[in-house]
Length: 434
Ligand SMILES: *Cc1c(COP(=O)(O)O)cnc(C)c1O
Image (cartoon, rainbow, N blue to C red):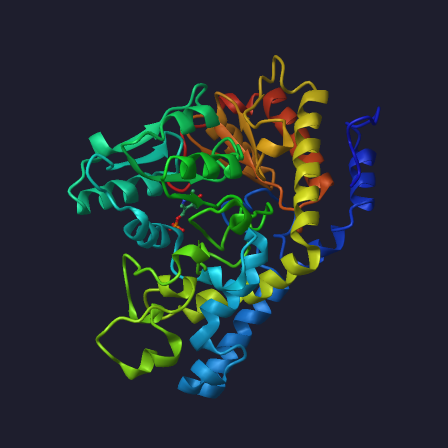
């Protein structure tokens, strides 16, 4: 991987082009529909469509056209076991054996089912540890799970605070794992600042205290290698429409460690029944042997099919090479902002993302007091970021579809916006979907 660190002319356009010329993943970009004249830096909210994902979706439609109901067993791959088949392909991306992963549900629904399974309040152990920087859906879901179990979110939901408003200190998270805690649920990567938490350390600390622990991997699946089996994580879940590029609302994924196979899912449904006997239609429950047991209802085939194609790209590129390029892209973006003087007056952009690779996810949080106006000014220039309150412009380069030159254009635009005073023009505040 090319290093942008010690090149004297690193702010030049030629340097950006030379990084692209040396990039072993550069050719994958042609397999994506990058909107014309656009720099797309929102792959951590909605990854772009690839020709591969498109073909997989069209293939599923064609199978429906040709087979009708026979597609459940006759389609390639058969719809009846599509969740398991896709799970086996996602498993290497999260460091899991094939049976420990299934593609099912949505991020939030999977969270509900897994928390309903693993939250077992007993005596004085009633609390759930999460964080003050969590994605809101996770906090809502945990609150409602507590409500279903005679808990009170005010008392029982411990949201570990951040010391700086951006990051979490693993020591603080571990200190919150007291004898009153029945479950720990943490993000792998924080959705705003992009901090990557130390998953193996947190898992070991929870287990030393006898507490099950799960992770929301929405911002790491497809971007970062994981070792969920080796770390001994109890459960995890993620979505397929961010770095996995399977399309808006694509069917999500979950992981359950083998030592929990056979446990009754908190929210059971017939799709989690032992597949060979599912159509016996018995009223007595029999869990599917692996993580498949945590499926609830019929897989939305048309919302799962694009993942078949999207995964082909990830598999060809390799998750290790994806991570290496992702780090090279975010290194380059951070260094270019600094080397171009944009982190000082009068530009005053701040980088809210940590520099250490081991603590960085896939995106860069660029903070500015006029964040919403800057995000809109970028969009007017064909650069697509997203905005997260209060002041974060998130820039997410995606290894297989973003070039170094895209980031060079972005930094140039960030400079121009301030030079032209566009950060002071137009309405302040953000739109409905930021
Ligand atoms: C994107 C995201 C979600 C989204 O949940 P859905 O159920 O897919 O709407 C949940 N949690 C985190 C941390 C996310 O980043």
